[in-house]
Length: 357
Image (cartoon, rainbow, N blue to C red; front, side):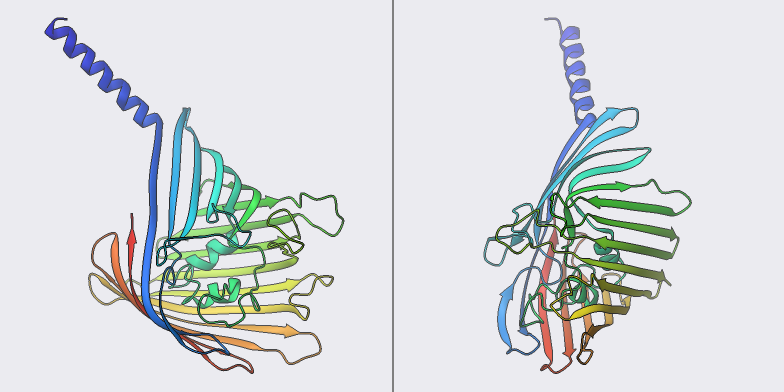
């Protein structure tokens, strides 16, 4: 083969390789965190330990896209929680390996359509409008919504207000394009049961973003379904309605957050046998104190209405500092205190390292 022909062949292979890469992409990504601290659950005793995921649960993910032409793409994501302090796999509330997310869908100028396990608008609003994000230990909102019991409750799940996890399995999710700062999410999860005792689940979220201002409203009608998990008790009982209003404003020197959510449980399935509704609110701030350091503070309350009994309250205050070592790695220190009616106070204190990859 002549030199010219060889050059043409190499150029053709390079072009084909580049087109293939542009049409289909696969990435491996994730987040690892470990910390050392002292944890005293409400009503319990303090324990000193090394843990993983108190600021955000560690995970590994696989995601891909394929360019279908005409502006349309096929997409998928599979993510699994990791307990990197022990090397263990952490399942979701339904006991699934791909517990963080597992979906496949299409996206384009029409928006995005996904089928599978997908984050709910309530979870997205909860983590987006408080300074501690999705921390199940230090975010008052996440503690009150999900109460996974990792640090500040001696009875995990006792006061978990959102009974359907952070993502709905067997769901269909549609995300609209953004127009003039407005975007929306619609999600549906069928009961997948012939039983009249079970109900379909619906939720909708609307967001508005304009410069430093961000707002989001969510409505949830969480039905009741035995569709996942084993045993007679479903890990996704739902049976509640919720309405949530959330906002943030970035002043530059400080960013402020505010949230209010109302939960109401179906009369034929009272939460925890006695609580029929609850109100949750949170106020928070984050402020850069240097080019690499950020201080965070948040205070939240949950007030539960109990049938034929006093109405208990949970009050959580959190304070934290994050120090970036690079774009992907940072050190943190955080403290959370919790007061729950008729229980001994709880407290969590930890220092740790976070790494994104």
